[in-house]
Each structure stands twice: as C-alpha cells, then as structure tokens.
Length: 263
Ligand code: IPD
Ligand code: CA
Ligand code: CA
Image (cartoon, rainbow, N blue to C red; front, side, top):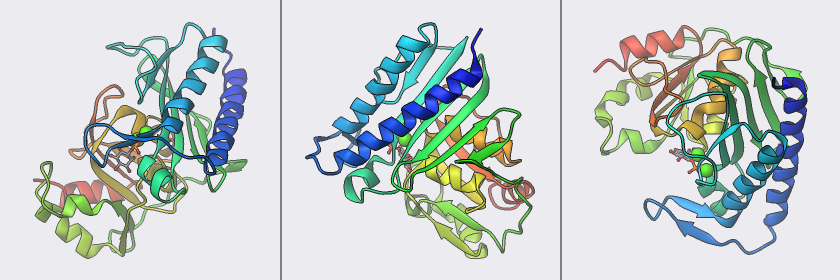
C-alpha cells in the first residue's frame, strides 16, 4: 500500500532540490543538443534532472512505473499500479534562451486515474500541487474554484504557430476566437500555462500537439479547481498518448468548443 502522505512529502523535497540544482546550473556551461528538429532542444540538465528523479523513485518506490520524457524510465503500454509521468524541464527553449518560464512537471497516476500533480516554476520558486479530491495549492495557499468568464473578457494562451500555416490546424479556424478574446499570451511552457489556468492567471489554453508529460500534472491541478481539460474535440485525454489540448474555465470551455472550435 502506498503511503501517499509520505510520498507527497518526499516528491516535494525532491522537486525543490532538483530546482535548486537547475538554478545553480545557470552559471555552468550548458551542453545543448537537438531532438526531432533544430528547435526541439534538450540539455544535459534535462537529462540529469530526469535521472535524479528516477534514482530517487527507484530507491523509495521500487514497484512504481516511470514514464520520463528523456527516456530513462520504463517502457510500457498501459497504466497499471502507480505511474510517475515526468517532464524534467518543460520549456527547455526558455531554459536555454531566457533562464525563466520553465518548470518541472510530475503527474502521478494510480491505474488510469490522476492522483497527484506537481508543477514547479523553478525561477519564480512557485510550487503548484494538487491531490485528487483535496484541492490545488500554490505553495501553501489553497487555490479558489475557478469562476466563469465570458469569451470577451478572457485571456487565452495560444502559440502563434497555430494561427499561421501549419500541418495540424487550419489557421483560419482560430482567427475569430483570437479577434474576440481580450488578449492572447504564449509562455512557452505547457506546464506553466496549465498552472496559470489553475491559479486564474489565464482563462484558457489551446495547443495542437502535446505529450503525456506536458499535461499529466496540469490536468490534475486544473480539475481540482473546477477547470475542464480535454482535447480540441472535447474528448477525454489519453494519459499515455500525444494529443491536442484544450483547457479552460468552466462555462468558457463549452462556449469556445461549440462556438469557435467546431470544424
Ligand atoms: C514543450 C513546451 C512548449 C510546447 C511544446 C512542448 P519541452 O515542452 O511545453 O510550450 O509548446 O509542444 O514540447 O520540450 O520544453 O519539454
Ligand atoms: Ca514538455
Ligand atoms: Ca521537457
């Protein structure tokens, strides 16, 4: 039987330690490589941070499964038992170019269901965390339930990529939405964008292609404060597969989905 209180205490201390190591690395020279294309970056800190968590998890919870973005975890096809879904640095491009606006993101699932979610904004030193059924927090402050907002009063996160020619969505589809909302933002870290929805700093976030480690923790956080997390068609996310993502405050999610996203 997993002792969730003890596990929660340990994860938080590991995350803070990993964050400190990342901040200290700002003074060292980074080894930067590319993955799928020249803009898909990975550094030795992404890899070292994932290895750091895997070592800790293996020694404290040897029967848990791990899905890590950098590939040092396990290979498996279904969620069973307890699974850790880890993005060691979400927003690597920001880490490399700006040294801000990146996060450690960890979602812990039991069977198919999200149980614990952690997003640590390393530079602002803000730890967003949630336990299914117990609410969401930023550090020690409980986050209030999200309130409804009109499309006209909303600020949505959206990458400019999706409103210019791309292979995943007709850019014209999003134009009426962009023209109606109060403003658009793009932070370059899906985890931070999701933490900002949970804490009310943003009202919605749309992305055409994210991986389980990008949204695993954010989904748990957002649902704990009453936000809605689906793909762009309004369907439930599969925690083990890549998909589009559409998250928003209650009410706003339905309005945007039915008025603006129906193809
Ligand atoms: C990326 C960031 C970015 C999103 C990309 C992700 P990474 O994660 O979350 O905001 O637009 O799709 O891949 O590669 O920095 O962990
Ligand atoms: Ca990521
Ligand atoms: Ca990453």
